Image 1 (tube, rainbow, N blue to C red):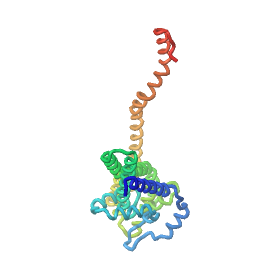
Image 2 (image 1 turned 90 degrees about the vertical axis):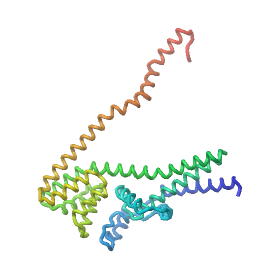
Image 3 (image 1 turned 30 degrees about the vertical axis):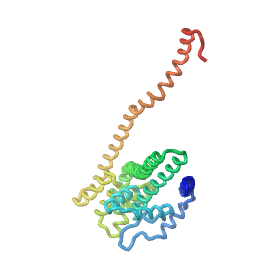
Image 4 (image 1 turned 60 degrees about the vertical axis):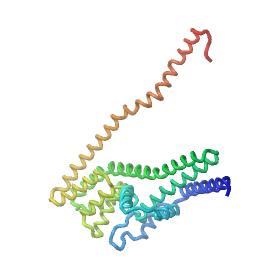
Length: 314
């Protein structure tokens, strides 16, 4: 097969892959009502008694199945799979096949970048060594991009949980002070319309289902801290377990913890506001001040050149 034929076939395969990715991105999804109905048809507990909430909410797309096939062929250790499974759970992806799909996506994206860059550079009649170097660089970028995406998901989810925690704690405190037990108060959080769509409320709902399935409350709360990966949630879990063990006032402990979280959130906002003036230095120095100098000093410079050299700059 000639080099021109190889380039043509590779270009066709790359364009076909890009079209498939675009179709997977824009193809119509199920409506929210249909997803709720599909969720109600599926069992919430498996035969081992473990909660499977959110793990079977969405079926794997053909693209995810293809990535799972690629990932299953990789020689991955159990330590690596366990590490990334925890990260994916903290990002909100609880499917058992999530780590395999993630690694398969890394390899597939790297191979796609490799093929596209190599074919493009060869089409432009570049040196073979340069084409290989650029293609290998594209392969590395394809391997790194899913990690960047995962870290961004973890950061956004942690921020969402942190900002919703004081309001959830206020409702939890009111429910406990009204005479409800901790389990009933957690169920009330999941039923409240204001918090039902929040990530933290769904995590508390999972805690409630685990307790009803027979898991000890302390273990379910510790799993909550592990699933979220947020230090404030881990501190709340330690507070709830310690309060239950020592028999202290749960309502008073929750109110003090909620006040401390609000103070911490206000301090973070004040710190971000104080950093704003420093962050504005670079845009002012490189974008705004030069344009102001041109606008203010431009006419004066034209007059000076006219007076010194006897002509007008047009």
